[in-house]
Image (cartoon, rainbow, N blue to C red; front, side, top):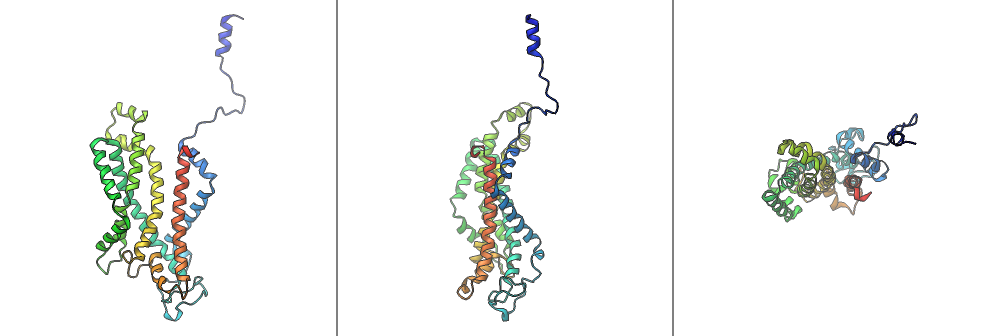
Length: 309
């Protein structure tokens, strides 16, 4: 065999067999994460719970036709009957109806507070991680100062000050309070992700092609640094729901005619020896909701972290 024939045989491309799709295309990080989540029963259990709570908050009439504001003292501490499957509290209100309708305020406050915290954390974390230097030093010290403030104590003081009007339900006061006090973890996570992403080759290439700071941060860095940030916000949503219930229980959260799990727990606590049902069921729904969001965040975090695979 001559040398030319050897070269020809070496350079002849291999023809794929009929029906062969060729090598499998590599999956992205999101694709790998989805494959892990599909096999994770914790993710599905948490997703079902979250979907149920969100549906309950958005459409409470699908779960009960009773009026949560209709209270009759003649039914005080009465047991389950008819549609009132959880019985009645000391004011004669339907515990089941109030538990269902209480999901709306709790979820909305947690959601809006998390959005505010996310926006603050996004801006501060992006600026700190991208610019570095004295900007990073100043913003990092600001984060440390906020972290040094006891969150619950600061929330009590701030919420009481913002909702000093007795006619105020306290909804937006609690939202603003939680939003401005719970952004620090999200900011630190975003800062770390941005520092890691800005040193990648694609960012350097975009910078060499003339991309400005805004384009680099929004088009190249943020999409690749957002996954850990979103996970933290998912967990923070559950924490904010629990914190709202705590503030309401202490008398500095929602008030007046508002319906909330925290209010029902606070009202039922003095009468727990007479009947525990009005205290137990709002507590169970609150705990299940918080646990669902935290489990969902943990499952997503594990799926997006290559070191845990």
